[in-house]
Image 1 (cartoon, rainbow, N blue to C red):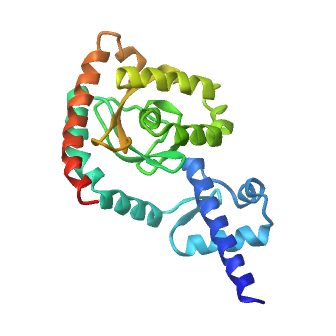
Image 2 (cartoon, rainbow, N blue to C red):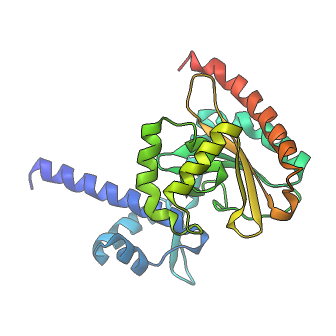
Image 3 (cartoon, rainbow, N blue to C red):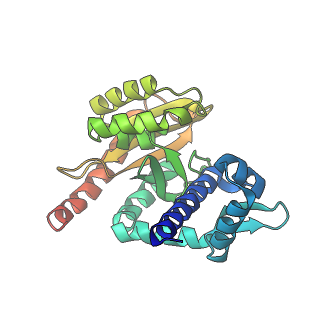
Length: 263
């Protein structure tokens, strides 16, 4: 086999392995069977088996013995946590998340952009136990879905916004009939008000409010979101929550600013 063929095959296998990891990430705690992976990836059984077995050997994928379903492994989670800490953002924002959780009693999320997705970098649980679209640290959601990702998306260059929306549009239908037109309307409001809001539109009874982290002279790098029951998000309470979020975000932005000159 020619050297070029070996290189191409290696690159192709790497691309497929990454695609399988992303697929398992989207499946969440439910996981996927080997057959499901084969069907969704449109690959032959031997190819999928070889890749998944290698990923499992390295701890990047775990298999539940009883159901034989595959999920992302703890080794991948550990690497993700290390990467998040490596940016300094998670460590920098942790006190803010703790203060917000203590002040509101609601779960607080630190979200950051990762390509076409928004990733949960950190979270602090309040006294109210509420689930989220991302679920756990390391969970992902397509950019454009939910206030946390929209808060980031709204302050990216227009060309990037268009590319993200065009790429993620096929995924929007899974989220209460979300459309590109609706996301663009939301972006306009977010730019005007400085915060993103979902009053139970994506998940009935669950609301969220988010503010972008915008270091001076840079695009949005992340956002902080509060998830709460819709009953707790009264119109009178929105300004209070926005004020709390904005104050904490401004503190983070001020600490990120000196890094700009060293990058």
